[in-house]
Length: 425
Image (cartoon, rainbow, N blue to C red):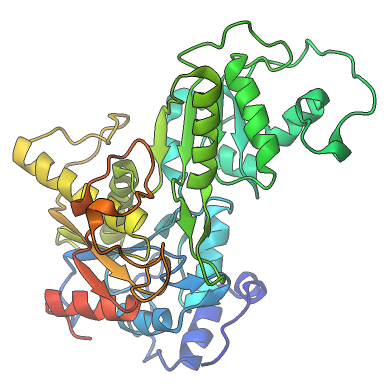
């Protein structure tokens, strides 16, 4: 298999790189002019009435390596003009990267132009929480934290490192980082009004300690309070994955593990439960509603007049991908039956009437889920006795963990859907 162009090539020749890459894979047919944003409608194919929600890690890539089946899948999904035959949104629980950077990374790996608005990161729905955008928020995670927060709409953020530098005596676990002298107390540091948890940080002990300090002091960690306030400051969190799959043979800790630590410490110290104003990323219904809106917008841009009625969510993690897709399908059925108002899951924004009727979950065996591997990668014999890897705020429902279909890889998943929809392979 030919090696695709690097990210540097993407930046240097964005209009040509994907054609050369696809040609090297034998994917290109005759090219014709594409108006507007380069979208072309295949006149020989009727407009699609279905779309794909594709997970990334464990489905399309493992670490920095593309899974070969993903390239085969996109031979079917992309037409001779280098454009998708059906609407596709990439829904990942990753968050320590910029949206446009993730789109460039996927473009280089998959061999066709992925637009930034086809990528949903775990924290993307935070754009909808506008009531917190002008508040001073402590942000935790890694990567381009401040830039990500500002892209989401947050105008006044402070990082854990900035807080640590302002109050050196707060970070006491690492002996090498303890101050050698006692610094003068500060009273000029503006109060923090909320907490953003965008992804797993690097130094967990520092983030856990300082986030607790902010919550227990009502946003004034340099002072402290005799009694911890409750309810505490608003907390918005994204990515509840306990585990995720990279190059290692067994799953790695995800941000859900960090959240579990924070929740347990808060409960142990205060005797009360940590509360979230918003939890997003899979399996949150809010994330799937956000993805559904992007699928609809994509179809409109392509000129596909038929409404998108079916969504197929392909993932490798039963707890996030399967549970989330099934939960969203259940929500769609309830909304259709009860005539519920078309609002976001938390009522934050008014949505256009939805034409989506179903969301089917398809589980692949190239990531977290491995039917032949050791626990926790293989299914338990009795779902009632299986350990629940989901977040505390999502009730354990064995039925929601059962995928509509289980296949070997994403290529088989695409073939399955095309067969069900009567589309040529």
